[in-house]
Image (cartoon, rainbow, N blue to C red; front, side, top):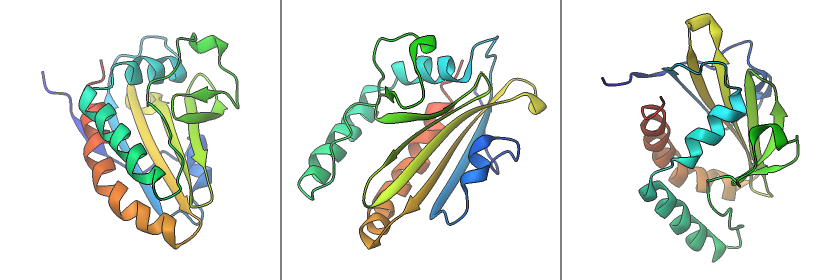
Length: 167
């Protein structure tokens, strides 16, 4: 059975929807899945643990290329072996830091001198059992905008692909 991924607006009752002012880039996709009592962070951790090798390769290539330009190496998308209940706001979860945490939504992000990225995994109970992944990017300067010219097309391919893999 093919899983249907739908591009949507960020749900109004998600916490990340309050972070849109001045955003350079906003993206949100939804997929129906059976999360069966799992928290948003549990779902995120399970999902990134199964990141395909080709995406990890692209991340490693990104890290190598941008480090020559003075940007930080973000590392690997996969998180550590910690259990979801061991994470606290401020902890690193793969390449991101944990910004906000509730059963219904987890917001992760990274901020540097060029841009600020926030990613949300939101359990949308208004639509049955569905998951919404949203990205909000604020650029701080021209270099951040140039960086996003290259990242945006890749992001638009990877996010729907990854969501289509939800179980």
